[in-house]
Length: 460
Image (cartoon, rainbow, N blue to C red; front, side, top):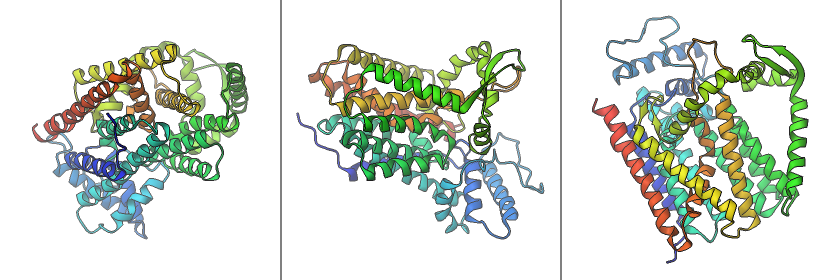
């Protein structure tokens, strides 16, 4: 049975309708840090002579709306009479302004309408980036698997129906621009892998990476797949293992020496650390990264404390990556979380099986795309885990990073998931195994919006 290429218009329509569903179901301000992100957007839209006064007015309007839409527990009332305005969440002004400037454009035209209307208008901007991300994923699939439309369609459907991703991509936050830009980065990388050095492919990668990094610091992980792709554009043939070992060793040595200097010392908790950041890295950290690099080094040295937190951190990162909503407090339940863990586990077995037995010959460009996907996913995981550091003092509250920081690697994650299932069954049965995978995501998505979100927000 032959499968036709899915049409881009149909892809966009499906993404629009699905995204619009999540946009409409989630009440105002019920997405993670949406109050702070929207406050930033509206301050861009109202930027004038009375800037401080406009910000206070915005916080008053947001707080009043939060109260009317029962954001807080019963009995909690915002202080609308404080001189600086009520507290409506953590300020997001530490982020670069690129996303907020774009979202402010339509908000500026609706500034005389209700604050909720302005919020939904800003959400529509995010919905637009969601649709564009799906469109980029469609083009990427045509490049990496041109003769396998079933594979392409499966990845697209999974991308559209991943609940946490659809929810986040229809909320007001700068991650939506990062995720779209990173999808463009990966698309440009695939062009470079396939065609070699081409000016427009380099421009696509460079501009997309600049936009991503200019939107949020989490996009720095995009440097890893780009660097690997540039290496492949120089070495167009297969690279032997000893070349890999040499290149990786040189990169780590040069990068480590350039970023850190030998300075053994004892940390505040009695742990040893041997290195500290060089001045240029400290300045970059203060201006953009905000990692507290030296404190992170000390924290990483405290393995006894870290290993106690890592198991729960990894589980929260995994489950929130697929199916957490709201401010991280709306969950689908242990059953769905374990089911997803099983699905990913089975796919991982399939990937390992393909690597060990080399079930089917692949073109060099396809093998490199798979390796690029693995490296991108690994880099996103490492970056998310590193957000745990520096660890706070013992006995104090500890923030556990959530999976939304890794959504910039969702597209390669889904490709690995689908390829893993492809490796588990004979060729003649693959359309059925992929249909089962799509069915699981359909049920997951249906349960997310029709059961979890509706029950939590409208039946409690």
